[in-house]
Image (cartoon, rainbow, N blue to C red; front, side, top):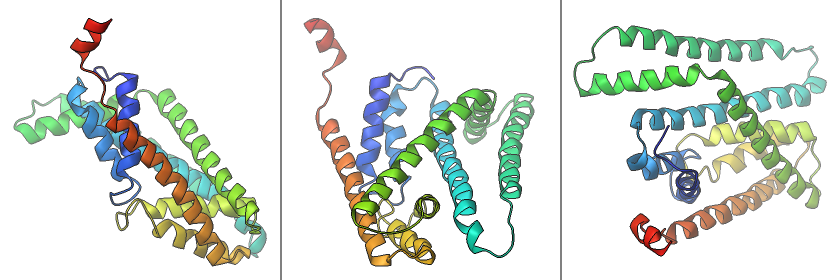
Length: 250
């Protein structure tokens, strides 16, 4: 929605990266990111729902990659011939039901005048969700971008692993890394530290990877995340000049 410029959104995103260094789970920075631009947003409900949709789209992308990579990696190791179609169809049906449910709730809520602050807020959130559901092209584009970024992250980890001479199939890395990141969403560690590395090591053991080396690669990747978070923190220290002062200088 309106009220938030690209620069404000980008600074808030960098602040979210910095917050992930000290907040539980990999989703901890989402709240900080939304909070920084909340006062500029014309529609607070749309901002909140956009943040929720961002996390759901990111998680959906991880699940799709994990399912496809897991099928490729595990299929030769299993005696029975498995088909990935049913889990994917079930997941897509669940997503379609969610989008249709948002539109149905919006029609139901629009017929009644909400009473009370909580009901008005709930109605606004339902309307915002339905508004997003009416833009499937935008949602698909965001999903494609998210999956492309996640694949680049996995590729970076594979490059670190090759430098350390860790032998494991590429599909196994895609399966283990994305599954470990899904597990790391649980708010039980700071930015998923420890949870992601332990999960990835356990998932790669059946493919012949040494757990200690996998944990080491995970910590190397974590250092990359720390650097990006530090950059986000340094950007926040550079406070932009007030709008009035900027206009006078121009």
